[in-house]
Image (cartoon, rainbow, N blue to C red; front, side, top):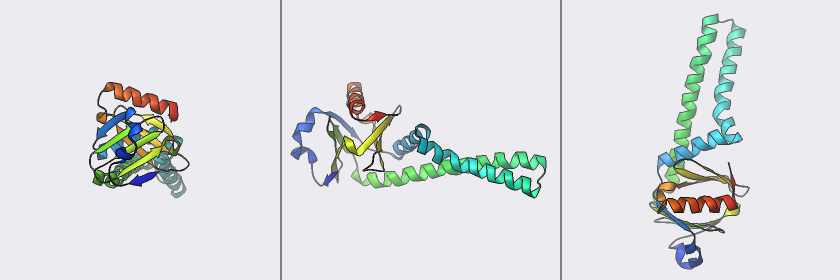
Length: 183
């Protein structure tokens, strides 16, 4: 990945033939991306469900060992599951806010994608990334979410609201489909 200040497009004019998105990222974009990741990937499902399931199992075993009454053995795991699930959702929101805090200073973003990769320019930073950095992507109603590959552990969030028109969403979907695996 290349990072540099200024306008990356001046030095990379042959990318202009690609598809362009202009948008300002929001916390909601990152929340939606993390929810989609949690539901559509094995690692995400494990992270989202392992703690609540383990907590309920530990509580149930503890209740049996201690000899809690039947009503308590029924109500306690339900309450535990609700509280731990709520905590998992709060953790997701906190993670989304942290991710957003990293990109918030960039302000409005402009991304141009073609068959080689994408050039993103914010108000204070610009960077170029080749598709090889990502291994797969997923799509929600409002976003494209690019998932990191061997050389990148993160995710990239691209809101569809930044498209200049519906044809740009279709063009980006086609570019992603040719270069990444869709989940």
